[in-house]
Structure formats: structure tokens, C-alpha cells
Image 1: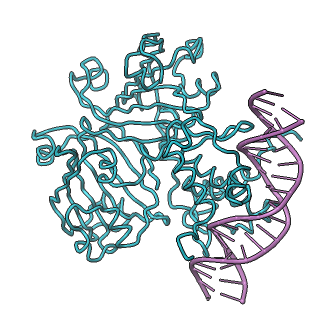
Image 2 (image 1 turned 90 degrees about the vertical axis):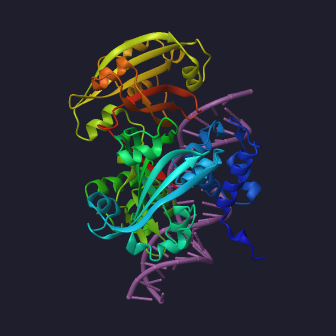
Image 3 (image 1 turned 135 degrees about the vertical axis):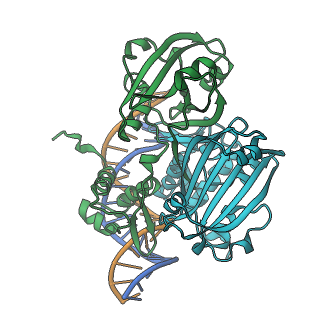
Length: 240
Length: 240
DNA sequence: TAGTGGTCTAGACCACTCA
DNA sequence: GAGTGGTCTAGACCACTAT
């Protein structure tokens, strides 16, 4: 058979364990089988099993205690985590109905800040996208996205109604997002934006600046989100 | 010799590489020696070398390309990261002079929110600490810390002038902090707090709620920081 | 084809916990 | 002492990139 069965063994073990955790087959706080037992179960060597377990430990699913065993953590990071998933995915996973309206999409010249974050020259062409995002019908944030135009030819062919930026970047342009830098601050909003979000002239908002990078640390996108921080909280997991 | 030389080999390799990166011996974007070369250099096996490299990859120092080599990343996560270091360490590392004044320290009863975050019963004894923190003489944030009193006997013996909470938790009480959950939102401040931070009656601030956990996912501390988000930005790294 | 990283084996010995 | 995880070896073969 030529199935997707070419998955490496350590990946199979990871999948096996996470699915057992998700189904509560492995309950929180419970000790999971020893490394030896996984060796027998998957007919593999201990180093391979350990690769799987270490990876799950670093993701927060498991923790190990020498001499005692390996245990399922009380919480696992990934859900609450600052993992790179779009707004749509995050909010829908949390049970909200999402909507977004495209306010603007045009090609402009990079100002200093945009140029710096995208690591391009000032006045280079960038695609500017402005969206207003709703959760359950309530406007929650305004999003300004800047893309290096030379990296995304024919972008508007892909950017259709309520599109997911990350989907387009990864699936249409085959640029794998590896990590992102985020900066959070507060700011007084300009009149137009303030009215869009709050229906008042001046409001103070949370500002989230996000730059996504690929494995080569090339910037893939720069987004500034203006968020009504009384309606929506950001969540992170910090690790030692 | 009975030095600290009992460090495992993979740890020595990690230290060797990070120090080379920090000293720019390994420049950004540069290909570092191959796994084979590290084997010879440290007289060890490839699996051991790979353990070191994989760890540094996950921390963002390096990235690998199959068939080509291992390269120094443009940025490394840890500095900007949501790593668990106290305010003092973070700000001093960034070149600011820090100061903090202790406004209050007392034992109180846990309200619902505190109880939930510390995973204790309501009305349990908690140590409440209020501090005002400055950077270069400017007040930046108010910090409210709640500790489960039963976990920290004789706390005020350790809590001396400008103390580092994490130091006390880890060094005096030997409770290793493993990870933390953080939630960020905005909020209108009460009059007293608003005046402390901004010298005006009502200001909108960034609120950072932080719960630290040990490896057993027991909560070690719960802190709410009220931050002047126009003076101070939070930084994170998100990973896939 | 040579050189790189990716996966994996079948052992070994050590450190720690618990009964 | 039995069982657990922590470190490590000395190989193997495969997949991918360059030239």
C-alpha cells in the first residue's frame, strides 16, 4: 500500500498519544505507559520513542519525572497558545461566529515602519489590506496588513471574500510560516478608526503588531491590529 | 576534578554554539559546521549532536535545511520572547534603570477570581503584594501579585527591598517555574490607580494577567499588571 | 557524486523514585 | 531491587541539495 503510511514512527507515536489525550483515554495527571512499553507497542527503539515524548513535553502535553514516569499535563499549551492561526480559526474554535469586511485593498508605497518590518526598501510596492473583523456581529478589531508586493504576484486573484491570509500565504504561494514576532501596546485611535470600532471619536485600543517569518527568517507579512481590548483578550503561554 | 564538568555533552555543545552566536563567531545567516564535524569536535556520536541542534532550532537560534546544512537564524527568539523572566531582568537587559516601590503587602482572603487562578478555595489566605514599577524613573506599571499563603510560609522574611518574585519562588522555596499563562486586555482604571500611573483620574490601560505553573501544572503565583501601554510594549514570539 | 540533514537501531550505563 | 527516565554509542540507510 502506498498510503500516507510513510509517516515516520515518531510522528505516529505523537499522533497516537495526542489523540489519546484528546479522547481522555489518557486522563489529565495520569501516568502514560513507560518508554519501554511504547517500544513494544510500536516495535521500535527507545530513542525513537523518546523523540516523540520529548516533542510532546516541549508542547506542554506531557511532563516527565525521572524515576517515576511520564504524565499528562493538566493543560496543554497549544489551544490557548500564541500559535499562528488566523483570527477566523481561533475565534471559530472558541465558538464565535466570525465575519470580516474588506474596507480597502490597494498597492501603496512602503513607509519607514512597514519597510523596516518587511525588510524591504522604503517606497517599495506593498499590498495594503484593511479589514474590519466581527465576532458574533460585534466589531472587535481593525486589521491593517502589509505584504511585500514582489512576493505575492496576482494577489487579488486569491484574495476573495473573507479570505484567510495565512491560507493564501501557505497554500497558494507555498511560503511556510515558521514563527512570528508580536508586539502589544496601547494607543489612542484616529477619529475614523475609532468610529468604526467604537462609534465614538477617540478611544484607546490595544495594538497588536505581528510579523510572520519563514524558516529562513524572511518576513512574510506585517499586520497591525487595533483591538477593542475590553471585548477581546489575547492569550499567550510563556515558557522557560 | 569535580568541577561543573559533569554537564552532559549535548549541553556543552549547546553552550558552545550559543556563545559563538552571541560573539558573532557564527554570524547571522551563516552555515555552521556539519553534524559530523561537531561529532569530531566533541568526540561524540551524531545523535548527541543532533539533540543539541534540535534544541537550538526549537529555540530559534538555528534552522536546518535538509541537504544543505544548518544555519544561524536572523533573530533568535529568546531575547524578545515571552520567556519567564521578571520585569527587572527584562528591563535591565534592555538597558533601563529599574526601580520599584512596595505599596502594600498583606494577607487577605481570596476572592473568586484569585481563587480560580490559584486553584484554591475562595476565602483561603493569600499574600497580596502591590508594587509600582519604574523604568528610568518613569512609572510604567502597577503590579498586583497573589500567592497561595500555604505555599509560602514566612514570605515576608524573603521579601525585601526591590525583591524579584521569581527569585524567591525558585531559590528560596525551590519551586521551579515551568510555564505561564498570560492574558492581555484593556481596562479603564480606578481613580487611585489611574493617578498613580498617569496623574489623571481615568485612564485606559493594558492589563496583563499572568499565572505561573510548575511542571505539575500547580499554580505558583497570580499577577495582574496594569501597564501604561503607550510607554511600554509587550513582546512575544509565536511559533507554529 | 559528495555532502548534508532525517530517521532509526539495539544495545549500554547512570540517576532517581518507590515499595 | 525493580522500574522509571537521562545520557550516550556506533553504526545504518534514506532524502535532499549542490556541482
